[in-house]
Amino acid sequence: MVDYLIVGLGLAGIAFCERLEQQGRTFSVINDDSQTSSNIAGGLYNPVLLKRFSLAWKADEQLKMILPFYKNLEDKLKITLDYKVPVLRIFASVEEQNLWFEAADKKKLQPYLSTKLLDNNNPCIKAPFGFGEVLHTGRVDTKVLAKAYSGYLSKKKLLDPETFNFDELKIGTDYFSYRTIKAKRIVFATGYGLKSNKYFNYLPLNGTKGELLTINAPLLKEERVIKSSVFIIPVGNNLYRIGATYKWKDKSNEPTLEARRELKAKLDTFLNCDYKIVNHVAGIRPAVADRRPLVGKHPVYNHMYLLNGFGSRGVMIAPYASRQLLEFIENGRVIDPEMDISRYDKDYIEV
Ligand SMILES: Cc1cc2nc3c(=O)[nH]c(=O)nc-3n(C[C@H](O)[C@H](O)[C@H](O)COP(=O)(O)OP(=O)(O)OC[C@H]3O[C@@H](n4cnc5c(N)ncnc54)[C@H](O)[C@@H]3O)c2cc1C
Image 1 (cartoon, protein in one colour):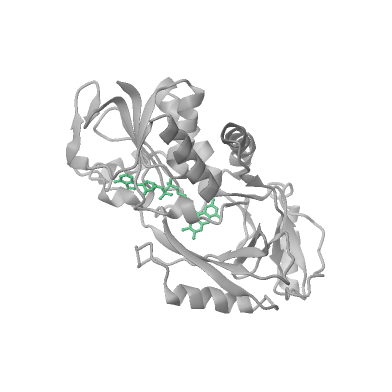
Image 2: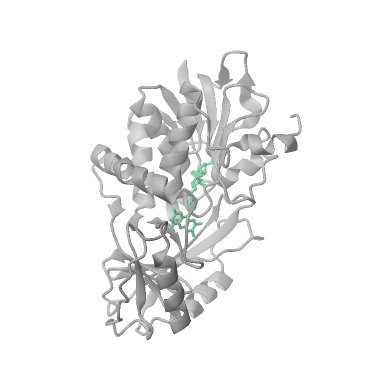
């Protein structure tokens, strides 16, 4: 018997496995490739919402946690994950510059918004009003992480690369059994796959499709992340990721011509050099109506838990939410009420 069965190995599942290993708990994981979000994400971490110049939810607490979290993973898996790159926001006008400096004066934002107005000296970028720099930002290579972590668990024979079949789950009084696995607890971390989870699909997970292009732009020579109507994210070897789109209706993981055109049109408004599109990917962000994660215990079944709803900020939220869930299960500590799924208990319909 293992302590935990985990379904899903995106950022949420990986973060929870890490917490379990740190606590010396035993576990088994089942994961398929039906969802792609963690594999294709831009991977940025950034404490500031750049549309409104406001602080992201719990950004202070999350930032403190992510640096040691990804560093531990780098050491353990012997890979590089965390690239500490600055994020520059292109100003569209003098008014926007003023809004930035007003925001930078606010106590909460002071640590994160530089008060220097940066001039543009890259001929490939159109930015006549310059840039504002967000501090304490970076990029985690989530694709490299997902691959390395699956490999790590596979070697230890802890990963079953299959689709979880809900009909085969047996719920006992003290444990769950699923095929040959017996586990004291079960944690679902399936991203948008929650929609086919009969125990938790009463929750208001919307899912927002996002698409990203990769371009090859040898003349661009830019090492910082540039944000205008889309992000330009340098990933090395003259390659840059461009994104992302936000679509609420299409729930497939297939790249679309419409998104490719949209991203290209937006990019062309501020990129002034030749480039070639060399890749195009899509995924569904597990987004929630109230923009808060979905973390906690099932309203009826004891020992059945959920870790989901990270929306477009999985890199920062995963270490934070996974820790809270484990401390709740193991030590009875209260989950932040804003993300505790008990806020939706009234919507639960008996299965
Ligand atoms: C285009 C795009 C760009 C993004 N950029 C960023 C960014 O720059 N920064 C950032 O922080 N976040 C970003 N995100 C968001 C980020 O990707 C998500 O917040 C995060 O990956 C969600 O992780 P997850 O583990 O909850 O879900 P997922 O990544 O969807 O993982 C769930 C896993 O469970 C598996 N699964 C599902 N159902 C089953 C089943 N029945 N049986 C077995 N396995 C199952 C899936 O196949 C998958 O492997 C982006 C997302 C997109 C789409």
